[in-house]
Length: 261
Image 1: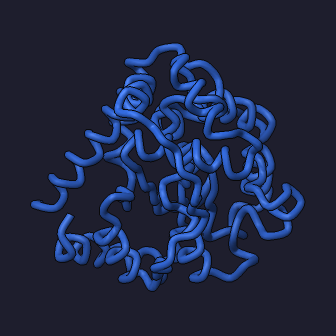
Image 2: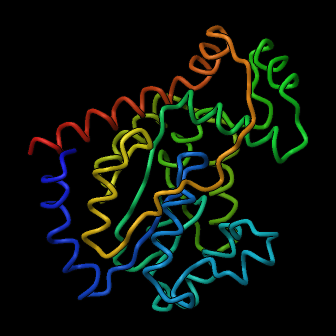
Image 3: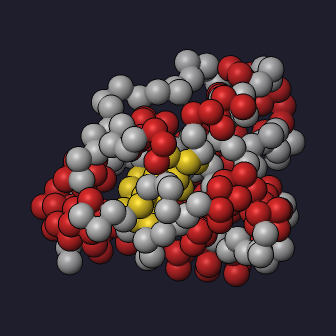
C-alpha cells in the first residue's frame, strides 16, 4: 500500500477514532513484530483504558490475561476500555464497542523460525532440539498455521467461560476442516480496518501516525539465537504451515489491491 493511499484510508478513521471515541482492537499475532506496535498503540491511551491492564498482566507473570478474563471484563464494563490488545482471536473484537481492528501478518516461515528462536532463548529448548524435531516433521511447541488459527473461525458463547473455552480451542485445538478454516480466515482479511505485514510496515506506520500513534523504530522482543536451518528444514516448515502460506499470499494481494484503489 502506498503512503498516499494509507493517508486516504485514515482520513475518515481519524475522525471516527478520536472524535466519536472508537476503540482499538489489536489482534497481536505472535512473532510478527507486534510488541513494538503494541507499545506505540498503548502510549496513545490512558492506562485505565487498556485491557488487559498492567495489573492483570503482572498477575499473569507478564503475559496477556486469558481470553476468559478479558471477556469477563468486557461483558461487565464494556464502556471502560478503549484499547484491547493481546494474543486474542480476531473475533473477540465483537465484545468491543465500535472497534477499529489492527492485524499484522508475517511470512509464515520467518514467523515460525522466529518463534523457534524464542523458545530456544526462553523456554529451555536447544538448537539441536529444533533440528531433530524438524527432521521428524515437527515444530516442537509452535502451533501450526497459527495466523490462520487467530483469524479464521469465530469465538462464541454466552458466558466468559464458554468464550474462553471456544477461544482456546480455536487457537490450540485441532483444525477439523482446513478448507473451511482457511476460507473463513481469508474472508476475515477484508474486514480488518488496518492490515499490515511485517516485511513492509511503512504503510501501516504512516496510517497509525495519522491517528497520533507512532511505532518505536527499535524492535523489541527480538531473539539473538542462531539456528543453522537448511533449505530442507525451511521447506518442512512451509509445508507444515500451508494454510498460513495461502493466507499470507492472500493478504499481500489484498494490500496490493488497496494500494491502487
